[in-house]
Length: 283
Image (cartoon, one colour):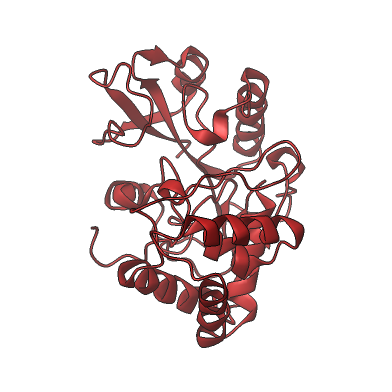
């Protein structure tokens, strides 16, 4: 546990919570507005200090709806809504039928609080949808539940977002994000899906080489317009090298981080191969 930081109640593979003590010091001291282009679990956005707004974007609409729900409600109301679903379906670490029933009903009527109730009882608390837009993670038997530890994270995270107008949430492809209003006092942070990753979000060719190239063009454009950016990514992951990133990064400053995701993958091959985590800045 990293002390002093708010931890997201969502479990994202490759989430940056444990890396916050290394990432946040690399950011400018005097940030006006902050843009999190791929906010994911939102661990970075909720912990960075800014004077102005925090623009949190992610292509996963269900996650953004969850954040908006927490923002629009008082903490007690949000907690009650989630617990009401848990009680209705008797969700716990043993009740598989209750989980499946809740998952089925959620797929018919997707509310942000039912989303969280289902995710908190799914395998590894992971978020995954099929091509039909249905949540399809299996039950987290004997492992996943809305336990006191998760409830504490939920309350602390919800307390940060509740009625806080400094957070602006959007659900866009990064290429659609218009950042023309930004100035040199602002900062754009990017933690995209990793091209050399076996995470659930990359199944089915979820993030392609073209996406990778488009992102670097997008960041080059920010740089050409005098805007600051930070990119989190990996040079190598379990023996696979991201040569596109390595070549592009030569134009900027590369910071190597001390961390391994060896325990985060459900694929067992090449566990002994290191993950080379980097942060790339243009300032």
